[in-house]
Image (cartoon, rainbow, N blue to C red; front, side, top):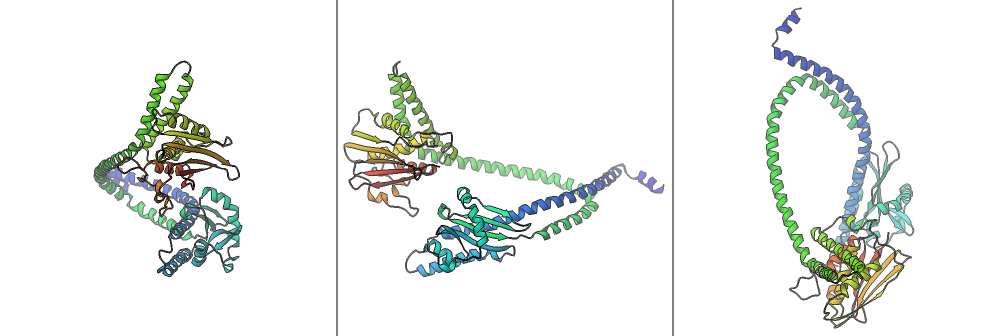
Length: 490
């Protein structure tokens, strides 16, 4: 009775605080028990994921390091050849051995194709011989990784297509991880790791810490609530004000940067593309003026093509690197021969008051398969190549031959654009360190200096790469040049 009387004499505010505290304690004990059970289940699922993810991360970092080393030219000159090779082999050995220093990694090797089968290499000297000397010593081949090679053989085709990390769990704590090895962007093989992560101690530490935290938190919950409410109120106000100022400053900076980049890219593109749209607009005006009941369908078809091409040109002026789905997509079904005929007949052979005589002959293979690329992107690729043959022929009579051929054995379409002019300066056919011919580089042209030039072949080359095609050019022995566009069908 005395205790009850003392409780009644307590200040009204403290009564509420005490009641709230007791209620919170009871709820907290209940929630803590529920959370502990939930935490056990969550840790079990999380640790399984963590084991696999950590194994893949180790392999991914190792593979990235190997790719960077393999993409390095080991020889700069004869004087430092030996030292460079030794350093390269030492670097490869370091990368191959470093993961094995972790207690969780049991085995690691690089699986590569050789003589219609697969071999496993785990030494820097072996990798160097394979990639740089293109040879494999008999002593290199070992049965040490026989099981890994068998598993990779069943995954090889899938990994070549997807180029994604593949891993699977054999036991509770044993993972086999295969990471694609793609030096210079070409699939060469896979890095294999056998990892046995052990994270039981992490779970135990988490649960132990959780139990201690529950006891401490229960005893300090009242003081913590009051203190947190008082401190967090002012902290949040100051944080929000500082964050708002930071966001405003970043927003202004990004707006300026984006505006500058857009202006630069727009200026860069507009000088090359405006004359295309201007010429096509002239054709549209001529068609509209000459339209009558007899030719209305033909003119309607041409104007539709012209308008769509202008739309694409304007779109490319805004996007320096457009999304891939706007270039390649299954909804696009382009007939290459039909497109070539349209561009030739309605662009190059439709020029008022020609200065030169242009003869364009077509030799088109009617068995070409459909191309799943936006036809106006293909237009932007072939148009500057044909224009180049016309502009740089160096003769008054220009003969251009455009031919297509489908190689069914290799599922490859070859488009040739060749002329009988003076050809291309040999200096423009030299390759840079990336293996790209100078004529396909930005701001490089065969036109006179001082003119807006140097983008036609460059843009054609870049767009061809975005389509997954190959573009090359060469001089013909009898005179003139030939552009070769190789279209691989998938």
